[in-house]
Length: 90
Length: 414
Image (cartoon, rainbow over all chains, first blue to last red; front, side, top):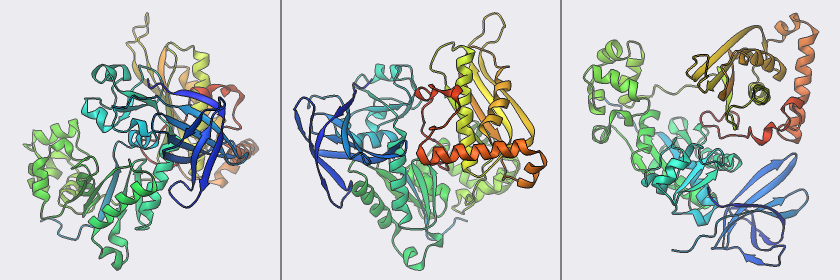
C-alpha cells in the first residue's frame, strides 16, 4: 500500500484569501517540531462535514511530499492530517 | 437511412475518475501508476486505476496483491468519496452553465442535451463548447483533470464517440463518418453489447458493428431481440434518439463485504442492521416507501452440509408498505437467519417502491403512525448534525468498518 502517514497535528498556517480556484490558498505552514513547509501547489480543496461543522480539506504539496491540511471553518483551526510518500525525483 | 440532423447530444466522461482526482489532489502521484481500492488491505479489489497503471496491465477487479506483481511501483489508495462527490458537483455545475438539460448518468459521466437549448446555443459549434468544458475543468478543478467528450445525434453514439480516443479526447459522430467509426470497433465496444448479447448477434451472422448496422429491422426484431428492442436498436445505431427517458426508482440497496473471515453471526447481524439503516435513509430521501425486502449473501463452502458456497438470497413482501429502519431490519434479520454461514458478503435491498399513501397508513393504526413520526425525527437530527449522529445502539462501532462507499450507478443520493 501507499505509505501515507495519518496525523492529527496542530499547525500554524499562512493563507491568502482571494478569488480563484480554491478561494483560500495556504502558502506555508509550521509543524509542531518547528519545521516550516512552503507550499508549491494546491492540488484540491474540498469541503466535507464532521457532524454539523464544515471542514475544508486542502491537498497540497511542497514538491517533495504531499500533505493534507484540514481547516475547521467553525473553530478556525488548522490541522495536518496526512503526509504522503516522499518520492525520489527521477 | 441514417439520422442526418445536427449532432446536439454531448456525452462527458471523466477519465479514470477516482484515480485522476487523486492524482490532481496529490501532485507527487502524477505520472505514476495509481490504483483506488475500497479498503486498505492487499487482498482488496481494485476499483479503478490510473492510465499509467492500466498501461502496465492493471485492470479493474484485480486484487491489489496481484496488480503489484505486474506493476511493483503501483500506489494503492483508499477511496475518498467526499473528494469524488465534490468533483462530481463541480462537473455538474460546469455542465449546467451550458444547458438546463443535463443528466448525470453516474458519478463520472453525464449528458448535455442541446436539442432543447435556445437557438443561440444550438448555433454554436459544439466541438468548441466541448473544448471549453475541458478547459474549465482544468481551470476550475485542477490541471490534472481530463475528460472525454463525445458529440452525436443521440445518447448512444455520443457515448460511443466519447470512448474513441481516451484519455482527453473529443470526437464527433455524424452520418458522414458513422460507418468509418463502426469499422474501427468490435461489437463489445458498443454500449449495451457484452458477451451474451454478442453471442446472440453472432448466431444470426452479425460479427461486427457494421454488420449490426446493416442488419434489417426485421432480423433484429424477429431473430435477435424477439421484441420491440430490436426496433430500438435499429434506430439507435442510425443515430435516432430512443434513450431519452427517466427510469423510476424501483429498488434501493446496499451491500457490504465482511471484513473478517468467518465472522460470527452476532457481528454479521450488527452489520446487517447498519445496512438496513442506510437503505432506509435512501428510500426515505427519495420520498418513497417499500413493500419488499431482499437479503442476499455470498458464503464460503460449508463443511458438513454439502453447501459449496456461492450466492444466496431470500425475500419477503409485506402486506403494508414501510420505510422505517426498524421495519426493514425486522424483516431482513429473519431472512438472514436462513443464510448459509460462514458468510463473506451481505446485502439488503428494498423493492416495490412507491409513493406513500397516508390514507392506507392510517388504516393500520397508531403504531405505524408513531413509528413514522419517530423515523422523521431521527432523519431530521441526522440531516442537521451529520450522518449517523443518531442510530440504533446495536450498530455502535460498525461505522468504523461499514464506511461510505462510492456510488457507481445512479447519483440520486448525492
